[in-house]
Length: 322
Image (cartoon, rainbow, N blue to C red; front, side):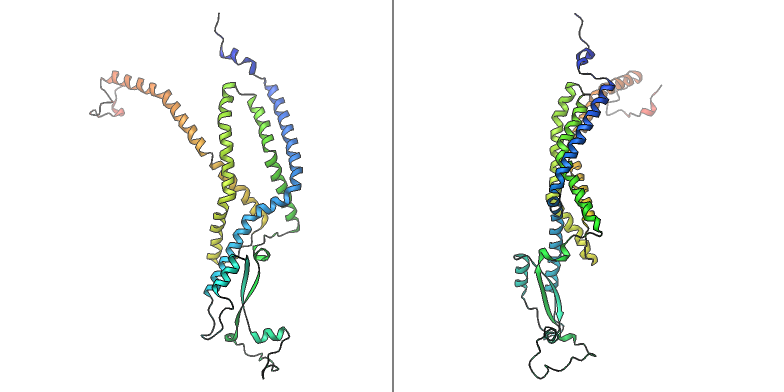
């Protein structure tokens, strides 16, 4: 009985070129339909997604301005040797900022002018005397701390520069949610098309390493969003403090950064699989070329009558005879 060939073994799993095109068209239609449904669902949850994306940046800005305010209060000195000190101690300021979520701005005012603006005249002989418009007494300035909740501080808010920018961000967030929700379905359709062109033993390797690859990619994305963003933002904002610049981030630029950094980490986490593939490739090359190397050395030894693997031999391939 004749032995079956490989073509006979896999004949039932082969497809023609036209059948592959038809399968591709079907998969693309199904993937597009699933993406459209997911994007429609994304419009209902786009707003909380935008707030979720903003959260790391808002936290970094709050920490930046809080740290700078504490440094300003600690470094403040009265203008005169006997001038008034801060109305709060350093412990009170730190407690209000760190435990009660407050922010402040340090200002200096003339107390008599402030009372005059507020409609309360100062008691005593100087109560009705008008202020001297030609002289400004800087030594009479006293520090004043203006408090507000950190969540309402305009410096930690993220801005847009046009009326349509917010709408564009909302649409991008809906698209992002749709892609994330539809990604399993899209991937399944792509796998359906690719699997049609693979033999059973090739599918086994895909089913083995594909879940590992997806898990590593999701791990990289999660680590980038939930852990790395804080360190990256703190590092970048330090340059603003060093250069004396106030950060004014835009939501559109931040959204682009949010998409690029996790994607880079996800791809970077594929490095173990790349190293494993490189190892298998190296092993395969050694398996193939090691016998050829031995045959070449044996031929050289026979042609020259010299053992080129002998460490006492001065082996120089350029001096070999023809």
